[in-house]
Image (cartoon, rainbow, N blue to C red; front, top):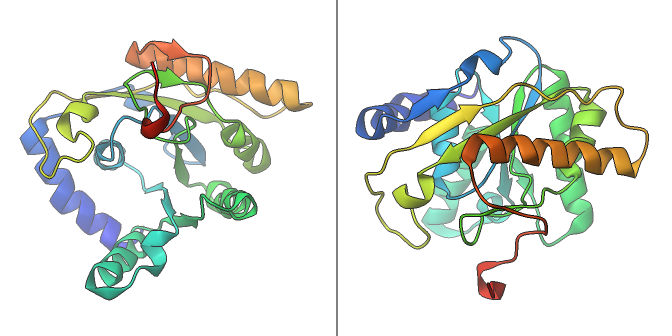
Length: 223
């Protein structure tokens, strides 16, 4: 486990536990050993912090590649943080690079690690749960690991978009039973079926309204 990850759990994690006292349910669904994908809804940048705080094992995340090549003192700090946390860089503007980032997670999972995925592909622009992207299921198939649905509520109120400081608001994080993938994928239709199953499980954990289309950017939100 990266040293900075331990320090983050000790400092930021303690602050979140004492300051917000998040309610955590379903920890019994997390395996003590072996790899798994943690697939959650995405409401706020605070989601990762509460997930790390609530999960007893190390969780690997993706981080946009800009965090790894920024300039100046701020860029240096971002590089140290994301690298120290064991994050996987992803270039969201390059489809092939994004696929390579998925491939980079396979060894982590096969080695018995947890990898966090937000299958909506972006933060929800309006608090609803949008259609999941299938890369999550392809990754689970390739790494031969299950997918554990994760539902979080309250983080959008804790750290809204453009907020400079976090706010006090109840946060709940729920882990659902693992969804097996091995032996279920025989073609693209099966990949979509499993992806939709995961999204349905997340929706049950959060109670969000489900929207059967991909999430738009906030700039393009029209309804």
